[in-house]
Image 1 (cartoon, helix red, strand yellow):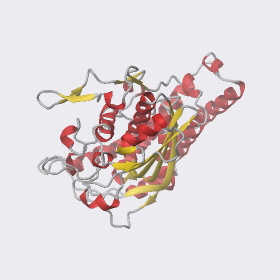
Image 2 (cartoon, rainbow, N blue to C red):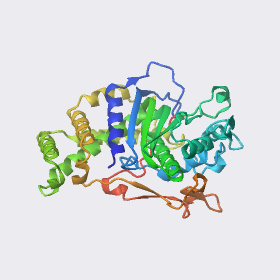
Image 3 (spheres, rainbow, N blue to C red):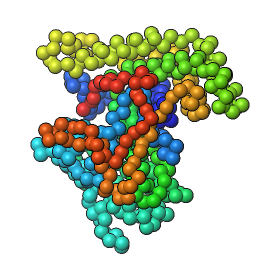
Image 4 (tube, one colour):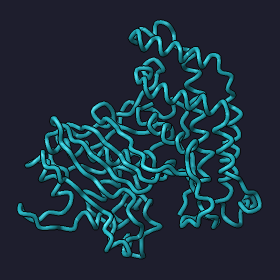
Length: 405
């Protein structure tokens, strides 16, 4: 696991425990069957990642890091607003017949402004500052331009960046107005961490800190069972691994860390939580939810109106269980004791960039299209991720979740 996993679990647990539900409000998003897509949300989450220590990819469920980085290059390198230039289909539903998403994302990046030093677009101006005036306090970009919102396929979710250089390290403060925690909780972190890595490399800096501010961090109602499944499954795995830690394994810990770990292990040994019951219940609900999205002529299709789930009440009941309280405690303890990762036999991904690249525009997408238009891995890519195998920790590689539109 990575530190990003613990940050992710802390955020999802907060939403489950303290999230405000909008079930009494009229909401824009809808599920494929026309049902309103309600959420539980918390306000103003600020997650901080030390990029000098790890590349923060959530490993609790499969993260398509190649598509995520491909999109960030589409926006900031290609400066494109056309889905035909993108090697995935994540923006197709918001594109017009020509593939344009309007004056969004890449279109805003390439708009030029006149400065006393010359004419620059947004990303080129940042690079100029990083190379020439790294102490400057106005290295700011903004994609949420009010006068153009009516011509955007979708309002920008991640919209504002401010860069900072401290002691030769490149830091980024990232503003995001809204975040679908299950579907995109890792996606944006991967993207903008990669952007920091790239810009740091070509500007002769080191990766520093990513401070990610999310104003509305939410979980959609039909995503709740998936989150519960992830949380409880991981708590169960950790409890099993803690029980297998030998005295020899513990030798890497300091005296204070050893005391904390032994208390932690004793707590788990005495705990009688039955994670399986909640996991099985959540997985049964996942299968039921999947049937809402089946084609209308499929005999297995069910209607949400005929078979409703009270997700708000389900969530309130879950957080009152001993199992959830135990899982929450596990997250708190290991998040505060990263040294425990070593003895629990978890690993985390590492992003590797081509060290010969010295210009931002030389980086190559991890994905490309072949002659038939099929998306494939790009062997010439400047990116690779090492030291992680999703299957080793029982992660669902293809856990399909419904997407609200």
